[in-house]
Amino acid sequence: MKNNNLDVCKKTRKVAADSLYQTLQKVLNSNNPISELEFRDSWLISLRKHQEIFPDGWYLPPPHGMGVLFATDKDSKRVKFKTLRAKEYWSRKDVFLDRDNGFVLFYCSPVDKESFIIGDFGLNIYFGKNVKIQEALMKHLALTQKVFEFANIGTSLLELNNFAANLFKQNGFINNWWISTTDPTGTNYGHTIPGIENPWIDSELEILKGNGAWETKIKVINKKRKFVNSAENALIKPGMALTVEPRMIQDGDPAFPNIYFHTIAIFKENGEKEWLTDFDSIFKLSGMSYLL
Image: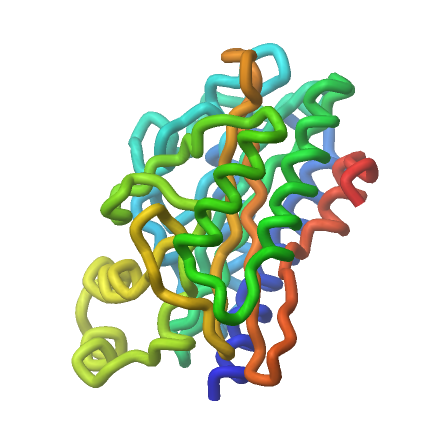
């Protein structure tokens, strides 16, 4: 059953990635101005074509469990938020995509209808030519992969947290900038995918499968997570999945955009592990082949 749920997580995330690709492709094939809000709504329509997921994501607020923020390499403040939950960082109708110098954040949090397994997906896209920013994106993604490579069955989430913190610090990145309002420590490098290694119990299923409000159901998902933080001693086990999402700032340059790549590590029952990114087609489409 755990391996099946790992497959569900993988498929749910791919729905998010594919629907973003389709939305971005339409936008980049047009010269019409598009706002954060228009892009988000277009992506939402694409997501909702998939009947196997719920109409909204679990990470609420922001509305629909989605983040679409447009900044530029000259003005990066829209992607320098502390949390997407803050209303000032919900998608706006008066902030427009810059197809030449844009630095963009995309995030969504789909949930499978049958299993209530989540498949979050998110990344930065950069349309500009600033070599420093391109190099920082390459470095950040390579370091994120190293965090995944360090994570193995038997590694504790605390050990993974400490490894990630030291690795990024040694490579010129500081501050895990995205504040988690549900993590007791306030910041982390990821979290477990709930309902896989620690199956839903009857009282949780009663809420998840009941007729209550979506906000009530997502509280169950939210609370079930264990975080890759400085306090969690739980071990990585076979049949577990966890997000690997360091969110770091380039040291010494306060104007530099915050960087974000949301990935998922899955640990199969047979001891194998797999790193889910689903980024490559989006990188190619966006002129970011240097990240392949």
